[in-house]
Length: 127
Image 1: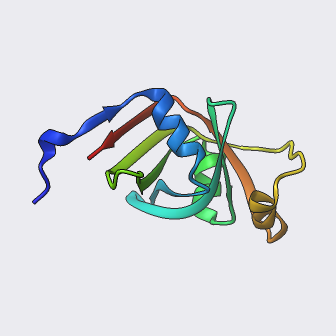
Image 2: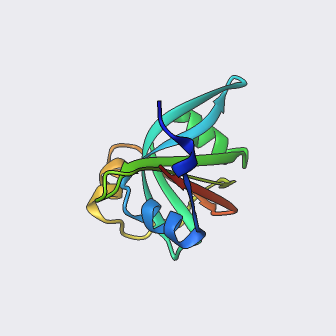
């Protein structure tokens, strides 16, 4: 069993660094009133906005309704400590699409759309 006394709360900057290094995340969204986690490609823009490239209709519908979306990423650092970061905000569909890098652009070229939300809440822990 993991010793939770060794849990460290991560600061906002550290959380944003970890989100920025994770090209793939779980998007937590309500589907027919049930919580679900869907994979999507992400980018952190200017440390205050998360951009999601997705073709999943549940994510796109949530953004059209301006629902709260949550992004979660997990990892293991160089010292073999596990960590988890969660960020939430009110979503919106992005209509002005500028040229994207290959990673997000690949999703867009296959019928995906961009969704964005401001990072209103971000929390993280390292174990």
